[in-house]
Amino acid sequence: MWMRNQPRQGLIVSSKFVHLFVHLAVLVGACAVLILATILIPTRVQAAGPALPSGTMQAKAVTLCMECHDAHIIVQQRMAKPAWIKEVEKMTRWGATVAPEDKDALVDYFSLNFGVDVPAYEATMTAATRSAKKAKP
Amino acid sequence: MITRRNFLYGVSGTMLAAAAAPQLAWAGETSKLVVLGKEEMIVRSFRFLDLEMPLSGFGSWVTPVNHFFVRNHMSGPVDFDAEEYRLTVGGEVDNPLSLTLKQLESLPMHSIVNTLECAGNGRGFQKPQVFGVQWQKGAVGTGKFAGVRLGDVLAKAGVKTTGKHVSFRGLDVVPGKVPPFIRSIPVEKALHPDTLLVTHMNGAVLNKHHGYPLRVVTPGWIGAASCKWLTEIKVLEKEFDGNFMKPGYRWPTRPLTPGEAVKPEETTPLTALDVKSIIAGPTEGAKLKPGLNTVHGAAWAGEDDIVKVEVSADGGATWVDAKLDPQQSKYAWRLWSYAWKPKQRGEYALQSRATDSQGRTQGAAAKWNPSGYLYNAIDQVKVHVDA
Image 1 (tube, rainbow over the protein chains, first blue to last red):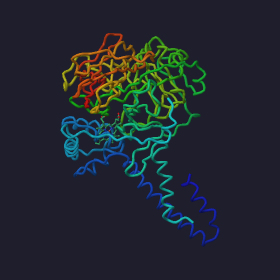
Image 2: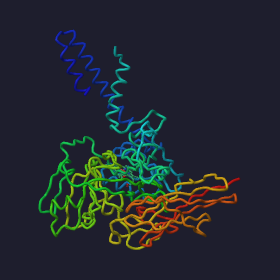
Image 3: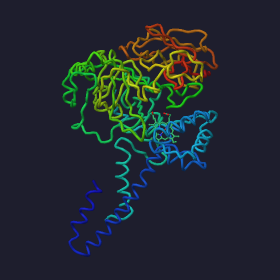
Image 4: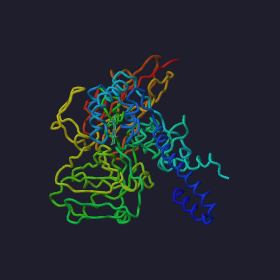
């Protein structure tokens, strides 16, 4: 809504030159803010969950493996390397754009951080909101 | 006067609400996830949303919607338009249909109480561990589901004699090259009078997390047989064979040793749930006082009835019958309780074991399978009794 209305308002009041200039500046500013916001927002949404662990493959794993889902589904697994190879292959078939030269390092990164001997992941809880008190079966 | 600063906040605030989807928000940096309509659920995944019912949920026979587990393979519909919505019925039928919600709702309504359980419930207890959502006890819940009979809709379409299986597809948004979530059930189960196309759950219109406006409920079967956001029904000559039927949701036709691989030919699609009981209280590691301590939980057996739940307080050496709660309905779990009175202090291993009307019972270990489905080992909770 906001995105569509704002530029129109800007154009309607721009009958005078000075105003046009001011409004154009506001428009440009608004666009910059919007671009900034769209860049920032995916990060906020991704942040709704655990982070992938640090390591040389962290940045690539974030880009490749958090496109469709967040990190929850990854960090709760405790599997050995042969299983991680199959999993990365399955996700690649499903659309993860893993470059052939990155595959081994990515598999090592996941098997090291989420191998069978790593302590279990502790799940978090969703908040109790106000509707909890009113809840009926 | 709008300063640049609050202008920015204003924009990102609105955008955040929109981007984070109407039902979901992140409440501050350190606080908990807020999922509107869901309370104190265990977060197995946020995107896609997988929420597990906490143990307290086993306290009521009908699970409140705000505690009902959520399982998604991908995300549900984003821009749903009830006016545009149609349910199509095609394939091996005489009259293909395209129905509006109103047309569907003009058919007679029926309701059932059904325990819905994800086939992967308990996967987190499998040894050796397997890939998938690491559910513990709560990917299960019991709802009152109301809607029209799938059989009535199929009768309108006229199933041809060649029609042997019925497949379902929902409005799920399929990411990348992920195969769509389509599964089929045999025509006999589809025509069963208890198999419903559901519009209401616990007396209210279906919540979006549970498949609004329409979902299948295939009673007594694994949750994956109860497709959400249903939009397409196809009658097929053969079982559907896409990813979520094969290799997904299959069961070995011979016993496996834990960790053993199985050939695809040695597997068959999962159908009904197995017999199972869980202890909801006391909880693992609880410190109790000698005297009366009620052990309680739930037991269910898919299409079959629970006939007995036994409890052991000595790690399975001796068993006593628990009391079954009188509330019952075909396909619904039975709540049970046992008045346990430990006299001596010490460590105890409490166990529960259910038996169903087919004579099936729970074993000390679950039947291991590579995807960790239908975990139903005897449940165990270790507690400490102190004076």
